[in-house]
Length: 135
Image 1: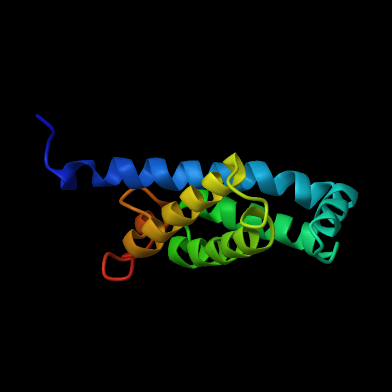
Image 2: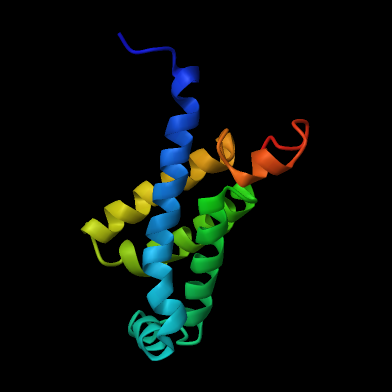
């Protein structure tokens, strides 16, 4: 028998938050640190090249804060905006691919984090008074 969902909520939110953060770090670090590659990649998508490193740094910073559980809702909203942009400019025009599926799943994961907050195990919850630490 599966225990009540409330007892698993902290585990599930931690797993989701860590996984989403790691995916953004995995994809953001190359764009943040390899400027030429990032610029060429974005120009190849028909977007301004300078946008590549900027998006890379946003993914790294927001992904790192998400990993720690700091400003989870705000970082999730920022990353969701990036995902909507990626979906609209790259994934949807490219058809049904693994990239489209990944980005849609990431967008849903970010939506859950916006609604639920960081969960019980986060720096945000550990450092703020209970009345403020709701996410």
